[in-house]
Length: 258
Image (cartoon, rainbow, N blue to C red; front, side, top):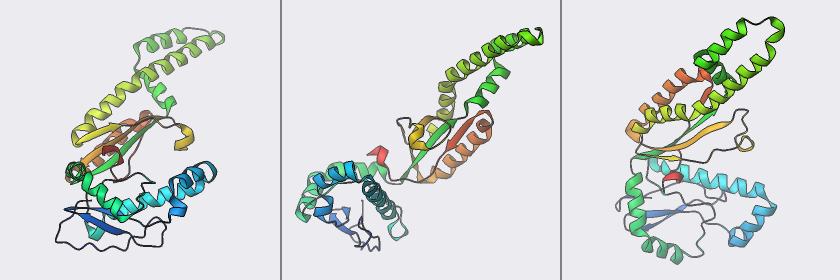
């Protein structure tokens, strides 16, 4: 984190063990936010063992790690630039930590300057395919012609043509997704300093019925956050009726931009 030399920083943030408070290890005009842990519990080999045998422990501690970072961003009511370290980043001695701050000072300082005054906001987009397919049936010239043909057939002979229309709609809907995403990004990107497109998550991870079709992170200046959120609201109002669902929450520690 970046700090002013003259300012005392006090905090009641509890660390990874949810008992001891975090403390600050300063170097020049930056400082590390540090949580003391037991090496017996957090040794790299022990963490690897728990990753295989005790996933709940990993999940709980990683979640607590994230909570500490979020709390540190808002220390004393400020909104501070912070470089979030990966869960499991351990220094066995204070000297080792000080040495890392000294060795990487210029790199850390550069990252902090990039992050200062900005927040990370995600945007995930999910698709209810049936609604988009219905929209395609209304707008596709090819499907409109097929539908006219369908109207001229007797009731007993419409089944296969209806199936063909459904398949055409599904195919055209799939092909149109990338175009819609481009439109969404054209509206959102100008409000962000940087954009990171992340891996699409499977339903097993999202726990949603609809598939994810876009997963992005946006680094937004604080003075533009309201405008960013309003633009997402506009996207919801215009596109949810044809199947697109937009999910955005934050701000998050800037994991995607360090």
